[in-house]
Figure 1 (cartoon, helix red, strand yellow):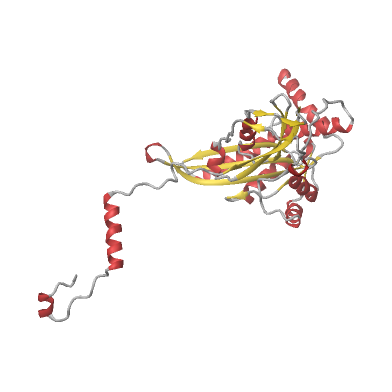
Figure 2 (cartoon, one colour):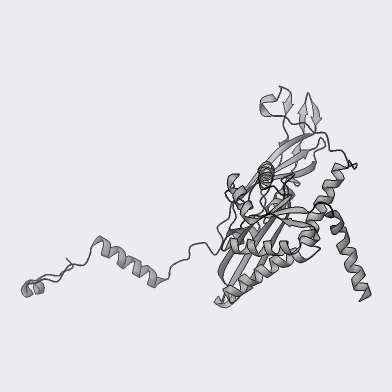
Length: 335
């Protein structure tokens, strides 16, 4: 028991010390999707319980009013400037966005089950960076049970000291270090050459391969369409340097885009015959592919025949029986 208490103290003290003087102000915007307000309320409750650990929850009514006043319409695909402006309007240090999906799926042997999904974004207001994205999934034969389990998992993510609280604590520690002027490596000096500023002897990087980033399983399950913008440094030696996400999307799409950029092969930019290191914008648009479940299924012969009869009835509707028995015998009503 003594060892357990000591280990617990080692974990708790760093985060508590970081927030000792200035609690981190956290806002939770109502989640998009199925019963989103219910899930965000559950997460707010977990945050309010952690006030003693140095977190201050922004009042949900104030958060909703500020988000509306800022013109926020529920997007989960924000550029860093947009995300930073939203955070300033909310008056918080960090804010949380999310999307929830409750759906009925078909498993093996045509067995049905329910799946509750949530994508949760933690955003730093000062920089507009996406600090963390987590994808949670709970399955059950009962819809209510799947929903309850998902809310429990969300609360647990906040209550665990090495999860959401530690992510925010690390960001605050980094902010404090930057304010104190702690030395850090200087960034690579890179030019930004716009097309309208190029001289006769200037050339942009010439890419040898055109790669398409993969659409992730998480994005497919949540039905996500998004754009990821990257700022990449293309070095004079033909390698890709630093890559920074300046429009994030979550659901594994940011990582997919970054890994794809790092695989690019190119001839470096030049000016007057001299190779240059330049900084450029790379954009990837992600669209949900037509999944096997969404592809149209071939109709069976019985369904095809029903369709044909329906079409015949529209083109040549059945006529009423002849009132004159003699005429009815001499004439086919289908003529």
